[in-house]
Length: 132
Image (cartoon, rainbow, N blue to C red; front, side, top):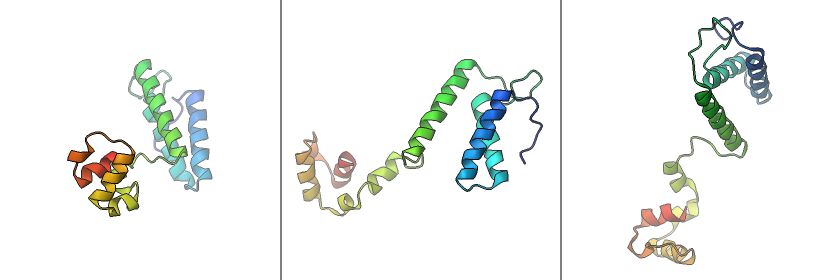
């Protein structure tokens, strides 16, 4: 059970937390963990309880809107299989094992096919990055 009293949250915030919690439970997350994650998400998006007397930090509507939009984009990316942990550093090495196994000459040929500019002066790692 998440710590703290939830009476200072609006009905909308409570419904949102329930919806998020149900989603986690469908994915097999334990009930306590799902509830904690749900309230953490609501708190991150809205800054805590919004009813008068709540201990949540005040956030401007613009900040809240931007955070909700960012959260929605990350959720959509996750549904499409794009992990937030797959950064550019990782993607260049893991995009295709076949690319990493190729020689520089083979990479040059692929770069020529894709008409990558400046390829003649690129090193192997630069070609890998340009092709991935």
